Image (cartoon, rainbow, N blue to C red; front, side):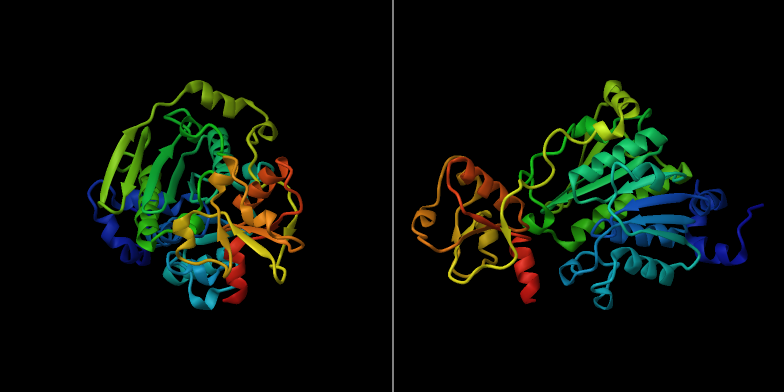
Length: 362
């Protein structure tokens, strides 16, 4: 006889009646603890489905606040939540759906120093982070704790999904040994994203977590799921794990596991506002510029600058300031640093890029 209350049976009846799931599966969910990194695009559907399914405890890790530009894809948040911490906004939505879930909030960024403490006692780490450094931190913590690391990632119309599990299959570093250099891989703000794409993958991440927690089905361990939303197709690519890679995560001092490549923009002089009369150089790609740009700017993609081009507008600026900008400030800083190495001095990078510029005028 199950230990479920009548209210729990009524709430979860449709999943309890699934063959192979039953009351035993539901009890495992109620006793489970899942940590979710990110209450954004991937975290939104994942958190709602974890709450709806009755996972007993959910820890949300996110240091960001809700912004108007989030709402087209981060469906756990609403207009009323703009300016609110995403953890709090997400917790309110989960409580409205299922008040019996114990939601714990970590309103800070995941770091090498706090990860082990935050993840103590969790059964699954669900990784919806939007940056490579956080993914490596999550992977190391998961390997050391011996818990599965459910990971998803979005880029434009495409997405990837897998379950990493040290000792049972590959870890994240088997696919991505170290983060790429800043600006090498565009973010969602640069490449764009449609809401249903994160909905598909975030829901799939929740399903992988439920399979791991209940023992129902076969988790996506040793397989990389690749989703192309333009064709509507999933493809699955085998991934082999290297025991030496896992062993390194288990043995090395986490402080020494910080990526060898830089994970932040170069240190250059920045400005918060465009000075009056400044020459503006936009180092984004042409397709980004076609959507919106700061009036009067000249487009010279970062790749061309790194290959040796020096925009002629710089030489013609005279006494005027020259401000370089991109989407968020990373590529512009790289451009200013590269030009500086060639002897072009006095350039300024627009802090926060055009995203911040647009927000200030929104």
